Length: 269
Ligand SMILES: O=C(O)CCC(=O)C(=O)O
Image 1 (tube, rainbow, N blue to C red):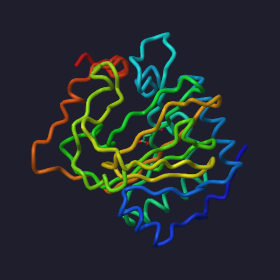
Image 2: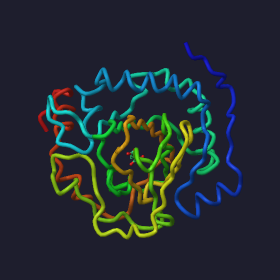
Image 3: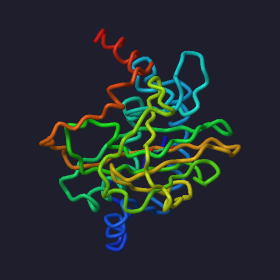
């Protein structure tokens, strides 16, 4: 059993790192959790994917594929993994990530669970360029960020994060489901300039942070090892927007994941 001391954070950002995040919309640090915790969390992670935790209620699905029953997923994702493995919360990762979220967004920021994205060895698909806010409720304004944590080394070859510096200042750009296929949950941005993109390779247990409008992507997994990423989230409470912003790309979606979620709620809407 893994029982870390979670009484206080052990990692803090410097003022220069906080300034870098606000200027560029992303930040990379080499360490946010100890290596024995990485090994423990990798076992929890692999169990959740092997058990297909949450699939019946739409929390586990193929992010980049059509997600049909019996078809091998090219980019499996679990939403809200701590619902299925509450022990994830008792970790140095949680206490350190919460502390850094407060450093970046202030003490009023909320911090919590997010999602896990798994790229199988050799077959794991790319996560296309996108802004996270393009997935969310368009009637709200957000001040939020994601904490992206690889549970093995993350390299250009296996699918580390890439960011476009300064893109957090953009509005939400037009998106569509990959290739315009409305059966696919993952979005790709249309017409973005990614010419200045930077790769952020990381050791196991490092972390990147990015804002909800920062353009980012990961490449396909061309390596012989699975790429595991756990993504936590932090943010100030979202506030209603004065306009009637709409994200047609989400209204158009017809995913198997949403059908499973509706069926599990006993709803036909
Ligand atoms: O891990 C990935 O492949 C993509 C992660 C991502 O898009 C995110 O954290 O917002």
